[in-house]
Length: 386
Image (cartoon, rainbow, N blue to C red; front, side, top):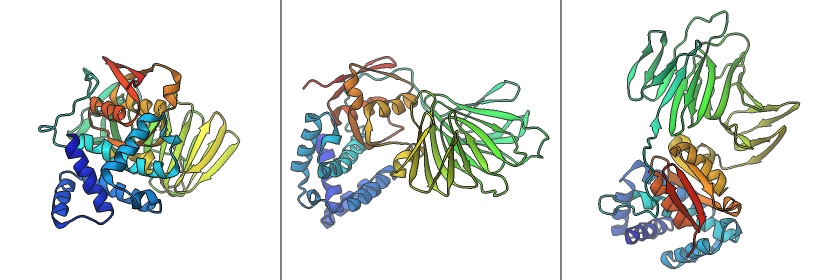
């Protein structure tokens, strides 16, 4: 398996540098066409390579030799953050290649052999519950196109999205709540045409139909919003400690109650972040972080913050503790650290979200000096002893 992985890495690097022979071009094209994920992964690496092509490390790159240098550096240091800027740029690209390829090779011929035992009794995918105004709960069955229930004839389910069709505006708002369990995700189209994708362990409270001068919903967890434009009726997302006010735009909110930082990342349009007496305006490419009553903003790579909508974990210099929170919500497991120092390890790369957690943990073990020990749904995190 390692031999095949190394060969694909060589082809990717030669393609980035424009050095493929006709025979290699055929092999490389076959690999890319193996899956849409392979094609998307290469396109992403190509963009990153072009962004960092000014670094001389790429010009001197010899795949096998330099990969071992990067690999040795990762195992020898506790944080990719400590690399020189040049090494960081190379590590982001190469770890992305290596991480994905561990999962992309033919499993029948090259099964993944992990250091960890499989997590038992686990399932993930499209699933949700709809809580009605009276308190009744309906389980959402994915993959079935139907009218949801006789109680809600204006709601349909196409297997991936609950769709609220336009109804006559009522005098008072009637609220429903879409609740996503750990290991689940589902989408929703509100009566005004706004589309919302909810991540695992999240819930959105929303009216069956909007009335009045505003459109207001309540989010706990993470949601990706594509708001239908209506200048006369601003759209407001209420989170635990702040509000996001928009007219029509696309953005991501991560506002879990047990996370110290809540984040709103703007993809397109404009939004106002309102926290108490403070307010800031976001433009595309900016992320607002809210800690307590304080708001701060910075430029970010938006793709990293919306990667979950494309079924990927994407991380760039992310603390291990924060990364494992995302993994724990998706795979419905709990991580326990041997010591607090491990929480500060940094990771960069991306991994398909629908792969097994066994494969994900193996990738992380290979990328840095950590070891995982699985006990049903509790996973211990140790410093790797070589």
